[in-house]
Amino acid sequence: MASSFAVDIVSAEQSLFAGKARMVIATGTEGELGIYPQHAPLLTTLAPGEVRVKTEDNEELSFYISGGILEVQPHVVTVLSDTACRAADIDEAAAIAAKEHAENMLTDAKSDVDVTQTKLELLRAVAQLRILKKGNKS
Image (tube, rainbow, N blue to C red):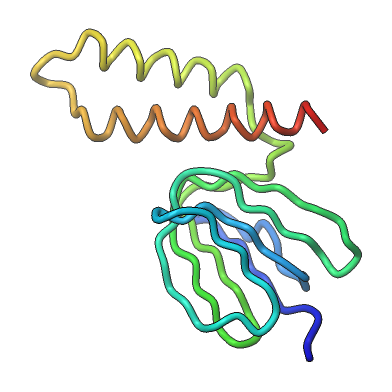
């Protein structure tokens, strides 16, 4: 029985991770997903949030994604996202500013505000801040 599988985490701008892992945990639009070796094939959408990878060396890596697609094949898991970064690279000040801006836009909603897009921006900023808060507890 295989104890690891290949994982690729890719954004529109760069490859963030390519290596072997024992486990991947991601936030799907329908809830949390835990992927282990020999997982059944799967294709699903991901919500803005954290993707965690436990490597063969038992190192746990954390990534922020703005949403995207998760594909599970017999020996490889691929995460595709428009925007992604390592959790350590999240700019806390920018995330706070984005959250406040989105909240203000929704509070002062005018007819020309794209409410759906503004809510998505708020969701992304909150996800980044949640990852930062979780990292500070460790």
